[in-house]
Structure formats: C-alpha cells, structure tokens
Image (tube, rainbow, N blue to C red):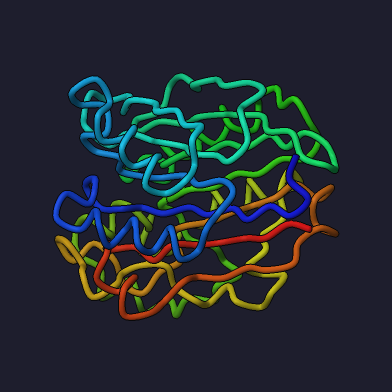
Length: 259
C-alpha cells in the first residue's frame, strides 16, 4: 500500500505523436504513483500496443483506457503503481471519464480522471453533474484532468476577453464575461483546490511554447482537486515548468502529493 502518494495529470496533445519520448522522460523524472493522461490519442490502436509500451516505460504497470465519447480520438488513460480495486467508465462525456479506487495506508482513494468537453460551459456543467453524482467508494476523493474551465480564484483580467478568438469566446464566455460555473460548482462543497491552498492558482498550465490553433491565453485549465477529507494530507502542489515540459506538449503537467 502507498504511504505517500504522488498524483499527476498531463494533457499530452494528440497522443504526443512526435513527442512521446519527451513525455515519457517528464513522467519518469517526476515518478508519480498515479497518472491521468488526457488526449491518449492512438493508445488503443493495434490491440493497445502504445498504452502497453507506455505503461512499461513509465513503470506504472496497472492501466486502463476509456475511449472518447463523441467518436473522436481524445481518449483518457490512467496508470498506477497499485492495482485498481474498482474501475468504472462514466457515460455521457464528449471526451471521457474514468473512476478508479486505489487502496492506500490511510484508506481507499476514489479517483476520477477526466477531460471535460472543450465546447461550452453549459455542456461542461452537464458533465460535472455526472461527476458529482458518481457513487464513490470512499470519502477520500480526487478529481483530475483538463477541465477546460477557468477559476474565479485565478483573478483573470476581464479585458482578456477582448483578446479571445472565436473558439475561446464560445468556450470561456457568455455576454462578454468570463464564466466560472464549473469550478464554482465543484468547489461547493465537494472538493478543495490545492492550487489555491498553496497560493499558486495564478500559475497557468497552458500554453507551453506549443500553442496549437492559438487555443490558450496563459490559463489554468488542468486541475487536481481533492475532497475536504484529504486536505490535511496535502503536502505538495506544483505545475512542472522547465525546458523539457515547455516543448513536450501544449499543457504543463500538474502534480499533487499526499502524505
């Protein structure tokens, strides 16, 4: 069982087709006990050849993959040092969501790894309802992934809206104002945000030097949230920014450590 648990979420941009070795190097350097991967594109091809090789190279032997719900290739994958006590793929997501239970020395942790829809806040709110209604096996809960959502705690300048392209405007605003419905809902009262507790909520997770389709404007889109019952066990929160993560994907990885 795990006496210290390091959690990591990483959006690897279209399966990191040209940068998979860099992504693997990042993960191995951080050495998480549990990893959620967004955009695991192609990981299910050829009898899951890529995901099996990926798991072996990062030293996380237990893994699972949920296919993108809208028929696209934006799958979710999870990897763990410990075996899963339970695995469930949640229905009704444009991308995907996987719920797993893992045993630790302080009890079972229920983790949901997801990639919320990039289209509108209203559609994301429907997915959030499914997450919040999920019957967890434990009061120790974690939610991780690219939530495609902004937090009001990050204190964005309202003038940022004027810089948005059409896609960003549809994704993050209504009537010319930024939307925070998703993160407000998740934090009332199901989860706490380790970034806020560490006073690092203004550290953006996208973009890196790679900004495909100019999709991001220095935003925190990737989150690891924990239930209030886990707050006392939080020891580390970080967004991993360096020369390697700046070129491995268009998002930086996020880590949280529990003790």
